[in-house]
Length: 281
Image (cartoon, rainbow, N blue to C red; front, side):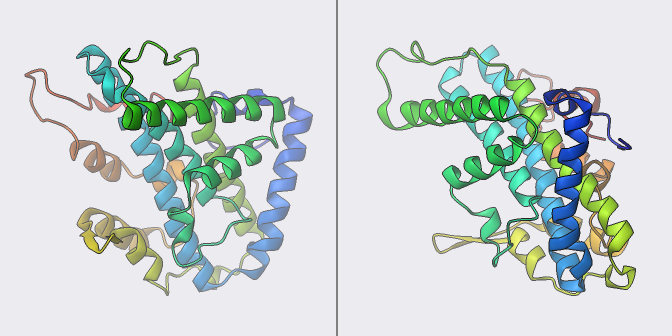
């Protein structure tokens, strides 16, 4: 199969013959649900969906680095949060790339945890149903452990919390599933979509990402607004996630969370250390 990204884990979930069938099935969904009906409105939406999915990969990466830091500093109280939300972020990345799910006025990026998990691991089951079921159970356990620490504060600390899972492997599989989807969509669009529709005519999707209202409070993210405006100018059609990530985007994202000092505070490290779960430029 002609793929542009160097996958580490996802393609090992099934044999080459089944992988070809999975790719064909997914491509058919993109073809029939999207590419043959491609419009400037759909184009505007899917550029934003891919952008949001890349942010979820970056978020999972920084949460994984925060997990290492909190463990080193004996701030284990935060570990269940970092573990669960890293996995949830990548489940959300998958959902944003699903041809079966609609934007629905931004609801795709605000759906419940349970629905996100159900959709993501059901999709992963296309590759390997047993692996998908196992990883879904691990995710639900991570969710329960996060809630245990947040709401019940056990007197025994984290004694009863489980860590018998390979978090980096799970995150890599999920990130690669989203990447795989984005590659297939790109190929189908190149084959079937009318290129005159490769324009961003609707800014409402970008506003729903950059200008957020929660519980009556407004949070405007100027960096998201800038990056989405950049895509509108320079990449006005959906590209695979690893191409959607520009070096400037990733550097700015990580530097926003970096302490900028060497005095033992949290540091995101060098760019070479950002590729724990995904080939981030």
